Image 1 (tube, helix red, strand yellow):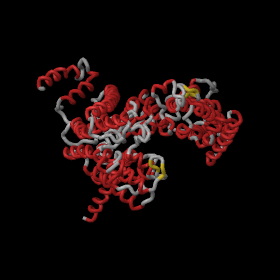
Image 2 (cartoon, chains in turn green, yellow; image 1 turned 45 degrees about the vertical axis):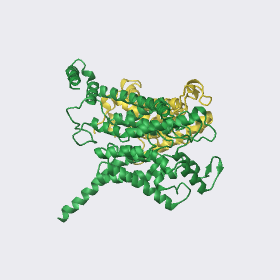
Image 3 (spheres, helix red, strand yellow; image 1 turned 30 degrees about the horizontal axis):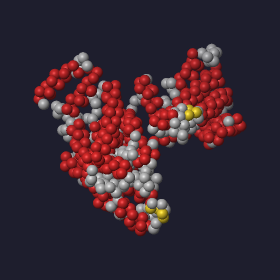
Image 4 (cartoon, helix red, strand yellow; image 1 turned 90 degrees about the vertical axis):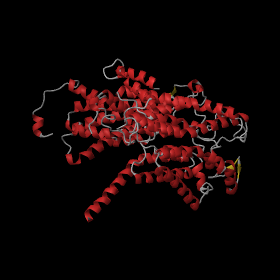
Length: 409
Length: 227
């Protein structure tokens, strides 16, 4: 390693000011700091305030995402295989080799496209503006594939990434300046731009669209099913049923245990509660993720679930609060999206409010608006916009409190 | 508009003097009503889904702004400044009613699509802005040129936004399919291309206008305001 580093360092003057390749300095520097421990720490930016290079923080987050990613690959492969077999109930843990291979074929191209497009744009901006390449896209580029349905066309991933990086980030000034979470911007863009590829019951399993679906083979997610057969008509497989049957069918299809392990269809990274919790543990242990946000997000969601249980209405209102935390992207959003230090609230009290309201809004959108079965994305984006206001009032309240103390003393 | 100022008149200027030509060319680029003054944004959001609508909207605004500017300029010395806004409103409103009826008579289907937005030209800030800022203090000739310039400046942004939105949102331009038939799924659509639904939603118009502003200011740094 020392030997390699020496060779690379020898090249450094060529890229320094006045050197032969001065123009390419941003590219050179970014690859070097990625490969070797840099001898300086990040000083600017709103997101990081200790002596680590920003790149290390980002890499930690990527490590935390690995369990969800691995499970997502297996899960995508499983459902692809199940579609081909024409049997929704094939054993989850059988034929692992085939499933892993198929999952890789689905997920890897998405990761390549996401990084390829995103980093190309970042490089162009870095070269034009003459600053070092920003590290922020390391995490976003991995998050984007994880929030996509398995069957989304690759060009859409590319378009969404370009949109998110340019409109979501670069026009605000690059890494650390963005108002909205990049990966969620990409997802929201696709959700509104190409709704047929981002929602419904055909997109969550690779291959279901082409085969047209086999009779009785539902590719819907837990949330999609919940929204469709627990709200107005309560139809299961074409026949109208009572609310008891609707709930029991739902609980049968998506048992708490299945949802916890993640053996249900959904976006690639979001299905497994356990894998996400491993990631959460890594984030919390290394101090990169905020416990305040995660915990209050879960608490907000759970309390809203309890409130809706108490209010009642249709069977969806009565769905157990703990279910809401397991299905859909709730856990993924709480752990990886809401905690994004750039877009979240900065003050400690603000973090609590931000997380709590995020959880509440997520469940509200989910249950009350069947047109948007996944409320977490919209809730977090909404709270991203609100975060500066929350911080402002927290700071103001603190100033007021201390002014009072000053006067009385 | 004081009497004294009237008496020391500059020598007669031709309608196409350099100064007057600048009145037309300036609003096209460095003093564009939409991208620089950020006026008339509401109509830019509402009627840029199709190029056809944007075109007729631009024609209507052109008519109202040019005639209105001239009328106000003719009346400028007779309007008591305390009620000038009301007088201006009356002028715009009567012109807008003429436009509305003309559209309904000659291009009824466009008139139906534009519906309330033609009437809302009355509240278009560009028009009142030009009356206040220019026509009230200038002669008829320059006011005519100013009206033309600002409506062209408004029109090209509107049509540019509409071209982008219609092309990517519906795959057509002025109603003609560009990428093939969407419903039959031939042409580009057979390759898996899908129309971008977000282009049809109003926020996308804001984003496109924002990008135009960005490009414009990146090219001409003098336009960037200080903070």
